[in-house]
Image 1 (cartoon, helix red, strand yellow):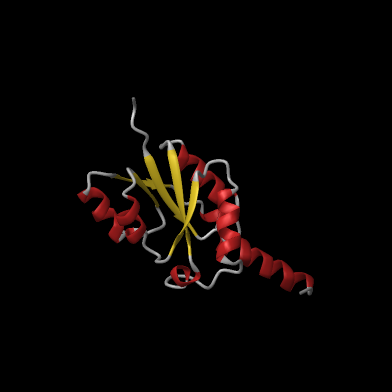
Image 2: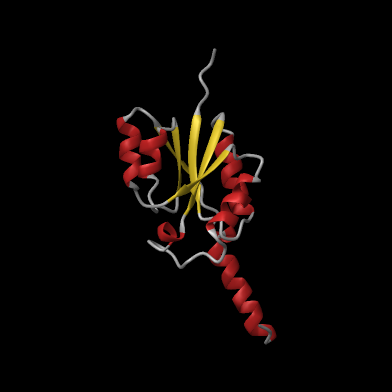
Length: 141
């Protein structure tokens, strides 16, 4: 019997968009069981502004995606602690990240790190910027 490959990806998922869906769909295509870490507010603010939506709402939205088998809280920007606990076969990293500490850990346990493309034109930051620009141009708030 073939052993199932477990993959781990992580997202903020503040505004769930096409980039998230493409990323997670592509991750799921490379594993049998996809666990997705959703960054807590503490984790997000290590690198970015606070998310607009609550962690509970973001976890639920990610879990509702058909490509996701399990959604968990990730309490640091780096997935290292969750990878140490879960020991997935594959860690999916975004090409937008610099070398992350979890990559060395994954390699040390004989697991893979797969770098996935980043969809910059579909980022939450870009979408929020377009909303703000549109609001300024229309004079509405």
